[in-house]
Image (tube, one colour):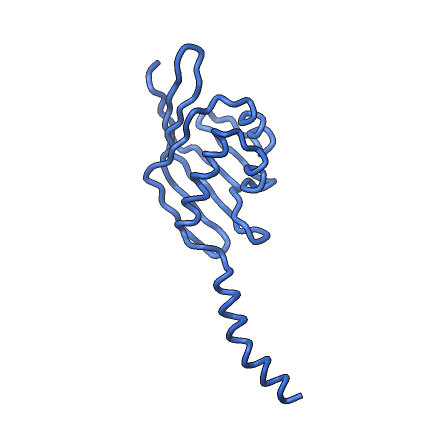
Amino acid sequence: MKKVIFLLFLCLPITILWAQQSSPPDSSFILSVNQQIDNYVVQQNIVDLTKLYADDFVFSHGSGKIEGKQSWFKSVAKGGFIQRKHDSVTVELHKRLAIVRGKLSVQKKGVDKPSRYHLKYVRVYAYRNKQWQMISHITVSEYHEPV
């Protein structure tokens, strides 16, 4: 019995170290997920997006429109996005929460020619069930290029 207890105490630091290493990753991981989401939007890859958006996701558009995950996915499925690129992105990382601020340049198919707009946003990611998921996107400001 003493040997078992000794082995448990011996293994405890290794278990704690392993648990720390399998904890949520650093901000560079969040940056890559943030861009990958928009790559999937352009690709209309709803299957992979489903994993990266929380079921309770809320999208607050610059127009004032607010929609949930399913409504946003219907827009994504229609297509129309040519490009969605991030710039000036910062990550404020907490234990199970990441607040991401940045700029997003969007190019969308238009009737005659592509339209472009730029927005500043705040996105919130939560670490749930061993994965990061976006729970909120808030467009803070939006600028449309003249047509």
